[in-house]
Length: 86
Image 1 (cartoon, rainbow, N blue to C red):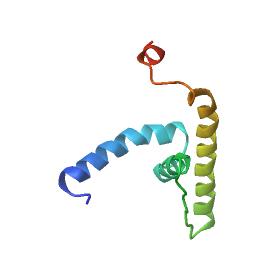
Image 2 (tube, helix red, strand yellow):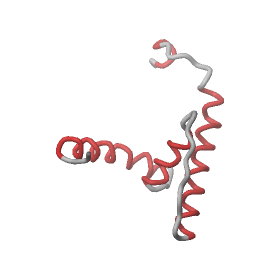
Image 3 (spheres, rainbow, N blue to C red):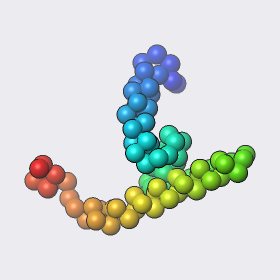
Image 4 (spheres, helix red, strand yellow):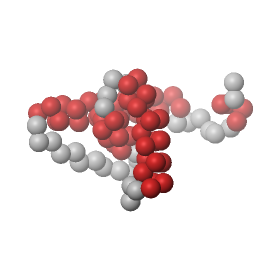
């Protein structure tokens, strides 16, 4: 699946996600887990072999909680270009 052009696309996506993870002081795995948790109609079951992994997973859940709080402000807004063009 991640060979050739697909591998290159995945690398490009990771390059764009790294600054977001850095901004939130988390790993790419935590960022991915937080995104998954924040998706409607989705459940995430994260395993951990070590206590540090469980702590990392808990931090991802906190990111999802922050995202949910932010959506209180934005979810009711429509996609009108007038609203989002500054």
